[in-house]
Length: 142
Image 1 (cartoon, rainbow, N blue to C red):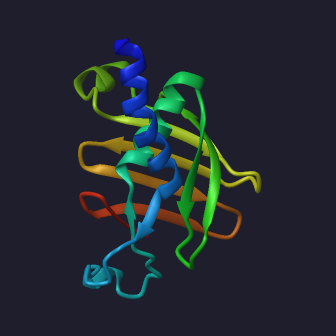
Image 2: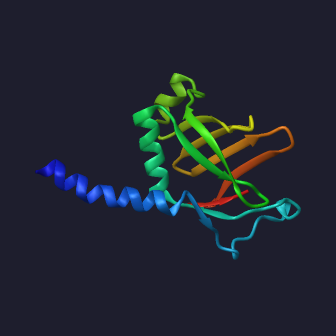
């Protein structure tokens, strides 16, 4: 009975989080520092519920689809898997750091890390390098 009740309470939240998408429009009031004023920015806010679903999928299946917004608009989708980028000593000192590696169907490479400071990513493509960094908690600025 408890398992059924838990399933009925959690399932709608997971479905709702998946339907909302991983990213939503960020606040236009957030200003980038002066040193970034000439860089193309695309402010997005990270949906933490959708991120939790993706992280659960990775834990369960060893991989998941993860979208990253382009600076010019639109999104690219990556097949993301855990990546043991950190040494065992660093991982033991910082168990909250999670690292991932992903590839798009176009051959782009994404390196993603999730820490208590937020989500950071870098995307390498044949034409460009894209950085995702939090402006504030829950806000991503590219």
